Length: 446
Image (spheres, rainbow, N blue to C red):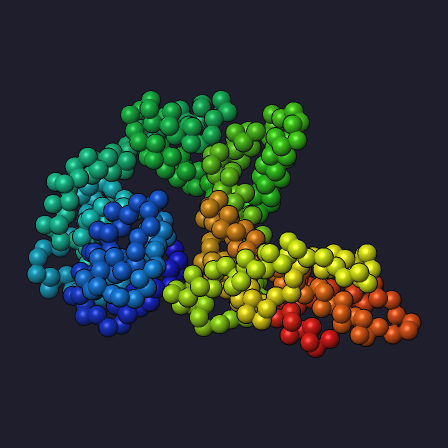
């Protein structure tokens, strides 16, 4: 988690870390954690609402901006951590109320520091303190006691997760080895062992992975102990694509290429196989940089609807296209050039600006996307941007091909072939549109 998905929230975080008093920043951190616990993934949240919840200030900026729940979760946690790091650490001896260090909370409840981080999302208050000259998190004792009282079941579950005796760990590993030899995945083993021993699946999974990390020569799931290699990911994608092609063509499904079989082969879950495919596909989609002409209005949310609106005079354009017929003196092989009316100056400018704006949006989205965390919705969004760009480019090309033919006739020499000149002109026209050069301006230079 290194970069914001929403630019305005990054700017808000920068403003608070630079200008807000420390006490104010502390309250904003608490507000961010509180709001984070309320966010639902399938909802959109107005920026002005988010800004008010974080700062108590009713901003009039970006009235139309809506932030997706998943993106807001990501950015709120990043906001809280960045603002928190900017608050000067208070020597723990100077704290007004008794404070517990992170280690003290961890030992008291037999939980990991990662578990405590999850508790913070649920509302456990903390602030930066200095202990023996080192900055770390401190937890007001009263806040800890209130959290424990309000979340007794959660705290008990966390203690159950962490407090395992050596004998219990041995039992977990023994059962896990037996189930693994029966062909189960790490996830399946974790669930079955947890049910058998009355432990949480997370505790079992952690015990197995920790054993594999410490004892790689005796690892139960050696391929699950670390990230997949690029070669392994390539094998997974090939296997998954083969399976998908068999499904579409109606061929008999190879049992060696079912999702479950592929997952077991690599000691992973079924869902992780789809994540690998999404990651590889995302890398392919964002590999090529986007070339476009930037305009400052592209970063103005209030201009987006106008830029993406229908082309001016669209009804007249479609009517002309429906009644379009080539002149009688046009060779049959060139008749298709007259199926599209010429665009007016305003129409061409609108389509050209829209194409560049979509390229701008695509580039910004690609920059914010982590291929390893890409979701199907992210890939569909990239494809939608590319489809919109192609639609604009094709319209510019189709409506200017007739000008290519007219220019070719003007420059036709005695030894030249009109088809060759038109072919060269169409190739140049296509390139001009691909590289965000206005087609009509380009053709004027030919």
